[in-house]
Amino acid sequence: MDLKKENPGLFLIYALSLFSFVNYNLSNYILGLILIYTTINYKSFIEYYKKDKLLIIFCIYMAYIVISSISFVYIYPEIYKQQVYSIMWWMAPWAFIFVSWIVRGRHEIIYNMFMFCLLGFITNIIIKTDWFLIDEWLSGSRYKFGYPWLLTSLYCGIFLSCIYIFRSKFKKKYILGLLAIVIIFLFFVLIISQSRGMLVLLILLLFFSLIYNINNFRDKKIQIFITFLCILIFSISQYKIVNSRTSEEKSTYSKILSSNINEIPYTSIGARIHLYDYALYLVKEKPFFGWGPGTSATRYLTTREDVEYPVNDKLQLSRFTHLHNIFLEISVRFGVIGFIVHLLIFFYFINICFFNKINILKDNVYTFFLTFIFLNISFNMYDFRYIYKDYRYVFIVFLGIFFSRYMHLRNKITLAL
Image (tube, rainbow, N blue to C red; front, side, top):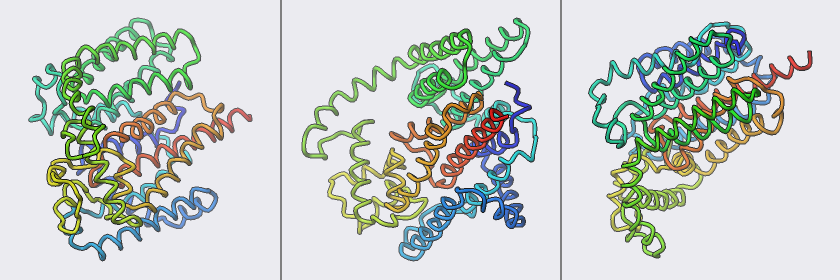
């Protein structure tokens, strides 16, 4: 695969969305420029969207943002005062438009994801040296270094680089040298990462790489070897915490079978049972428009007097900053209407990736984006990492959709020729 023949402009924008989780100030300035540029050139973007079915989804998305925000500010002003807001939340629609324009392939900027992820990694070390704790690496406990989505982007970048190395005509000594660096780096990231998220990622990488983009049996063997080597390293380095978590949850399993939710302890699984029950209660209270975008339900809504959640330890929930499930989180923030809108986006992506043109795409880059999107979806089934940043989650999903759509159409034209 020759990265220079792909559309590197989208690499740059997608990398920026990931890099923004590391350096908020820099990314905000760049996204601000996107906002200004897109607004000034709105006529050309509208003309482009008239030819695309995604205009319908975009209009629904924009309309719902306006409705939800008005409902949130004017109906629940007391909650609004407690939230952390900025104009950045409104940049998602403009970024959405801008990326679709980038996808047309006008810009040929030679950058790739791995370099941006590496840049983000180095930046994180520089600006967060107090989190750089060796003890946390060796103990196998939960990491104190950076963000899970940064490590996710690092893994995806490494995977993409591995594929690029093996499919390029480099000399053997360079391949072996780079392979050694990659394996050492994987080991380094594994030790400082959140174990469950990385394990899910490794499984997804193996699954999608074997299905989509590695045709040569030798390449498949190499990819299987790297993946299972990483899983082995993960198992050894995280054995202590896996064993302790298993022992801790033994008492939880028996309590879950009881009819009284108050008896369930606040362990990792037990806390999720409490949070899910609380989320369903909140959705029932405000079913249509929800409690507003940016709402951290378990931190702010537990202190409200009008939320009469019938559990003795309601304030115990305030220790948690989110509901640990993306579908419940969206339902609480945006209500049933917002949940349906997000489902439309999700099913549109699935339709593009699997049902419409499944046998057309052969590019390794596609596997990278597909893996990252599905990692976010699967990881957020039992966790949720986009606190106060609804637009960031939607932004990343939209970018994945556009890249998949562009690559499919591009390869369809190539095959036709």
